[in-house]
Image 1 (cartoon, rainbow, N blue to C red):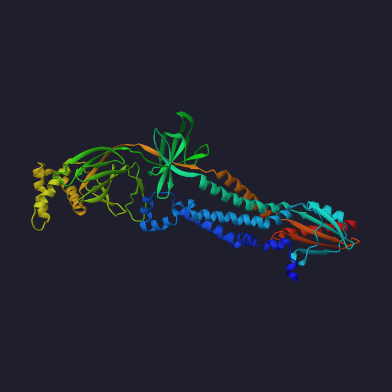
Image 2 (tube, rainbow, N blue to C red):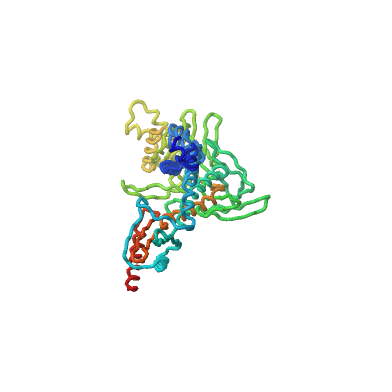
Length: 554
């Protein structure tokens, strides 16, 4: 008969079972630390990479290659990805396994003393103090009570009196609070990822809606709310530099046509109702009316066409030419410093972006500045930065535009090489054609010369004049339902309390052995923590008190 196998207890046999070995692996420190590091790394990635934006946003900022690679890893919807949820689930299993493995031992240690515990072994690592001071068990127990010990048990061994004192047994509950808090935080996050949502709602002023657009892969899904949200008013203030300083929205919730609640929200003061939170996230143009003039450079005389339309609308001429009003900015901050190395930020006023799509000229985006009409700003297809130049005069100056057209027409008639004399002759002919007195040549000559060089350099088919706008703004709301939030915040509180208990509260046990005549005292002390200094101080004070008691007795 195998002696070793015959000595196995049911508990030891249970610990050899496969499921118990799995619990041992899951609850090990390397596994827990690895999972926590993965969660931390994923959270860092989710903070750096903007989550749940449209495909065009990522391609414009990262490029198509990086977009396809990161999108394949679900990095743009990371907190809802299968691999992040798997990591969180494994973390829950790891911490739960630690509770199952170590919980019974900590629970047993946290219970009140039921009987005298045996004298510790040398391997337990306690402090040993021997003293010849005279003291009796009752006086020593009273002294230990003054030092903060609450539980006491006495026993007799070989005629010697044993006294066991303990304090801080409730510190063991910190283990349960910390591990339970981590489990509840993960469960709360999983509840939110499966039952909650986070989407956007763009509401123009004086309009209402009940649909939230929730990111779903590369697209959005429509989620209906059980009530309507109305944007009564949107306000925004700016710094002197033109940067937004504060913006807010007056929101009203409606159900069956009746007002439920109304509140003005700001960036840090959202509206909450029935577990749904409305955050002030952004703002933008909701189709502001704009007025501009088109100057066709492909026709003689550069004819004008006045346009009255709105942002985001398209205009077509039936011949393949298309104009799209892309964006209206009421404030633009630019660095106007003339010296290199210095900065002078300044608000240059409203601007309008117009995209031109032409079969002959390709795709060009113009940026028109209302306060600087002579400034030429454009970008062709593939160019990420705008090209800026000075046209020499505003295209709205009809006389100069007609003179420029006539001058270019005369220049094109010059055969052979063109020099300063040919330029002056062509300019004089153009002045005569338009019946402009030559006395204005000194005034009109320089800007016309600058404009001629600019147009020949960039070969633009059109110019524009931005003449006015009627703003209409929308408020960008982030709408979120977070059913796991109360559980997460409660778990965070438990986690902090548990950490404080484990860091600042330790279980302390002191065994005292008295001889028959109470003339010799031996003390053994154990501390459930690595920092032995608090217990060393306690023993030093105990020795001082015993010395004082011995002197008084003598």
